[in-house]
Length: 242
Image (cartoon, rainbow, N blue to C red):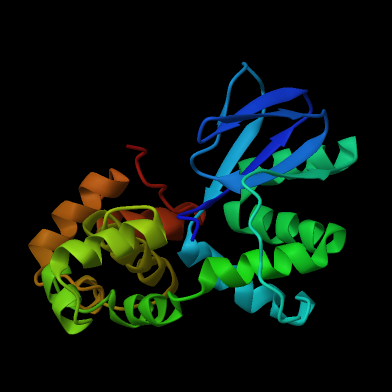
């Protein structure tokens, strides 16, 4: 199973290497591979990685477009090249800069239109075996539970849980959980009249002080300032890039 699907969008002729093998890629191509692939020559190509958690969401959005299972065994290609017109490449590059989720949906629908059977099977493989795990995480991430407690509740040793989480979400569990909780808290601050202490508890923090300190480090402002900024201008803060 792929740990991630990597899309590479290029106007240029490029050389790609994946696990010791090299591939010559024509200009104006959309390349679908895994996160072991790398570009050999310098290029302005755009690389976008999507882990199983993103594919789970995509699956719900495009399920009706997938080809029916035909019973034949799926053969994964290390490097799959999908030709595209220059204007399609331009659009994909623009979407990659604006919204990862919109990019993924448009890109995958385009791939399905080009080779429906192959990309239907690829998506099914990408989400297989992890639906229960993703559902568990989505239902539990706001609870006041440590990573060790989440692993215990899912009946996995901590080491295996952390590896499964990394493979599925592309980030360590502790980091992902903190970011999701803070993003949810920000949404509640902007869109609801809930008290800050209630938002802290709702988002898995045990006390107001810890929540405020963590929020300030992530967004470079405190929760009260978010509400003030929203009421003054309608703008919300963005997280600090690591």
